[in-house]
Length: 215
Ligand code: FES
Ligand code: FES
Image (cartoon, rainbow, N blue to C red; front, side, top):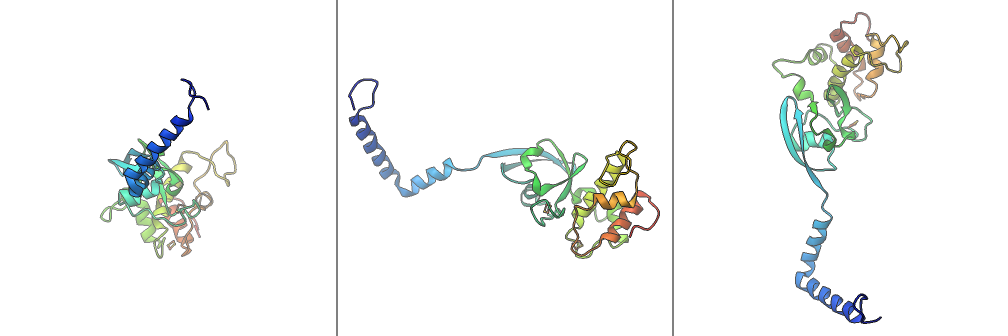
């Protein structure tokens, strides 16, 4: 290795190594660990959303799901965590008018969005019509799936009214009819271990004004 002006000399390498060793020795093992931890800290972001009509801003690890942001950071524990994998529907909330599984989406993806959880649909004193119908028709037993079922049910009726087709829509050009078959198909992503499905269908049919046997 030469000692020229552009090239790195062996003496330079030795000097740098010695300086590095001295620095590490002066920082100590704890300091090195801290520096490493800081370098690998996940990025954070302030996320602003309108939740149940209230403007909120939360500082989050960018990997936080919307479900965890609602439950752990905003303390809105009405929304439930079932599978945390998009398979049970317990975490369903309404975002900008459409239902989504909040365990499958990151909170940072909802900057500026309007989120409605079960707490925002009604109050114990003034229930949302769907909440009242669930009570009237015994649409739950343990109640764990119920917040997701109710949020989903509310959004399902809006989907049908908006003409969004489903797998059982006969004529897509004509659009879906408000039928129990349409409702049941669209609710198939909301699992109820207690098996309150017939009662849920009855509650939805009542709110939708659909006559006939929902069972
Ligand atoms: Fe989100 Fe099960 S907790 S779908
Ligand atoms: Fe118990 Fe649905 S009411 S899981």
